Image (cartoon, rainbow, N blue to C red; front, side, top):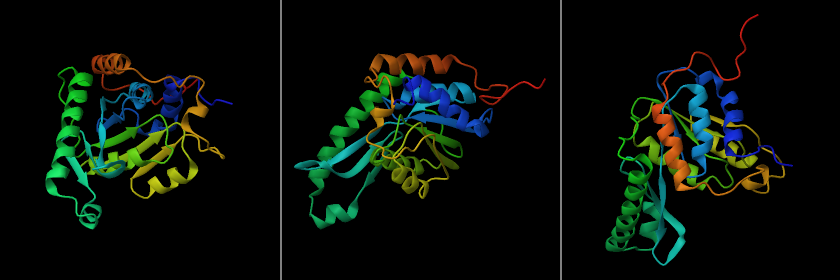
Length: 228
């Protein structure tokens, strides 16, 4: 049985579990596109925090693209698995070719999603990385590694649904982690959504544009009740 109607519903539920971050001016919410954006939009809206995307592009091993030799991320971040490259004697021009291709794709996506807006500042801030779920966690691990190079003061990961072992493993590399649900058996992220249709680029544009127009601070935590 699905736990969430769709990603927007999941984001509202996740925001309740993040109430301690509400109204704090040092908080920034970063979404892993595209599926993380509808979730993160609801989180940012509820917390009164700015929203941006944090794009991660896997660097595939030359000739074996399914094997990651590193990753690129927003902010000019590049993470390479140097031990893997040395072990297989990958020539530097081959690495540069893969990096160049993925840099162009990352730049294209950033331009497309942000519509010319500058990236959200990261250094010294409390950053909440949001996705629609965690299965193996490989993309989120790359995002955390990349984000660290931008020197945030605090990194939290927040997802509506996660494999229990993945949530536990990621907890060791971040300052805080909120996995709203960790069912067993897990199966797959999409199983827990009534509607898990692919998020379109148009929806990403609309949500980021809407978030940019919203005020930066809310008066109370999500789910808070007024005193009688």
